[in-house]
Length: 261
Image (tube, rainbow, N blue to C red; front, side, top):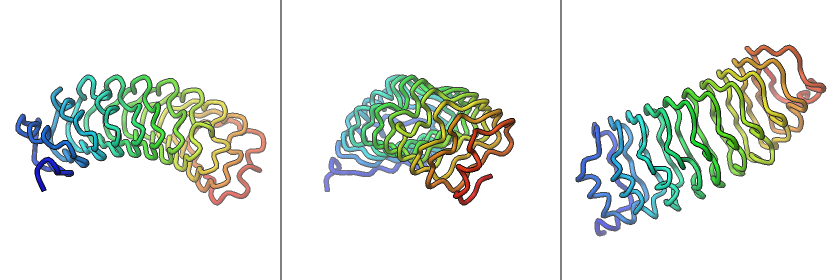
């Protein structure tokens, strides 16, 4: 097999602090690359040229940049990713990212897994989460998010696992968690934030939801209809909030559930 037919490159665990030009040269000559591992190094940044190299990988399915020391991503990196029509998995967890470039996290029709947990993100770019019809797992826990962009969590038909715990969220955008937007949602983790309220329609009519964790927030009430028509729910965590009332019918809604805490 010729070098141009190579489908996997593993540059992980090489103590890299930057990507040498020689590495980029190697990558630029691998048009059929599908799997690229750059995880578990000491990368603090990615040169702009890396984005140009990536743009040639029309077959790339898997990109792992986790467990580095990245503080930012190149300008235009989001647009580069959007031009990778086969990308299914993107790992950027366990870095030091404080922000994401414009256009990041949208228009990736085949993306299934997006891991951004354990960074220092305080916000997400406008449009984040839009046009991701195949996304099943979105991990954003252990950041410093104080808010989510308008429209976040809407029109994600394949999303099953959404993790937002251990952030600093005080509210959720309108429409977040609506059944029509996330019909496949199975696990939703929002514990250890600073939520004081939930949007209308939240937490009802989710036919696949098994676990909902809202513990350790500052909720004083729950929206009308909360908990209704959740036929597969097994675990609901509400402890350590400031709830002073519960919606009408709350007890009846949970009479058949396995565990309510």
